[in-house]
Length: 114
Image (cartoon, rainbow, N blue to C red; front, side, top):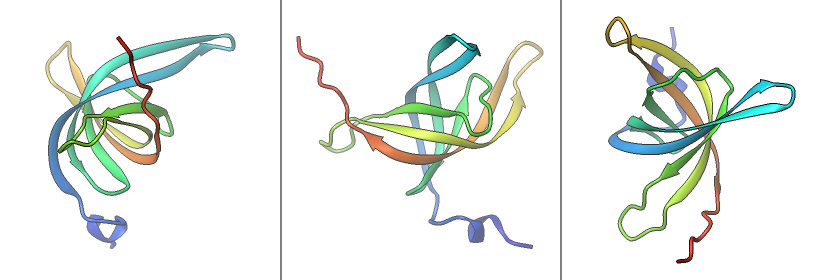
């Protein structure tokens, strides 16, 4: 049996941080619904992240993640593809979701002028 660490490309590092995201879902053939939210990272590696999200996402769903600036670097926008998801019931009315994502590539962040 292959262990989880052997299946990964790189080491996972603990990283608890809030990540704003935008998620686009197709409602029907001509309508798209845009959802904005915030997820909590649990850990990350060079190529992926484990997130805790307040909403369900589907496997292979691609969504945009805003990575806050770290140590004088600019904010980054990344695209992540959902590789797996797991339901976590919180109480009788609330669910959270553990979501493993693979980072696809960085997008340039548009500058906002005042």
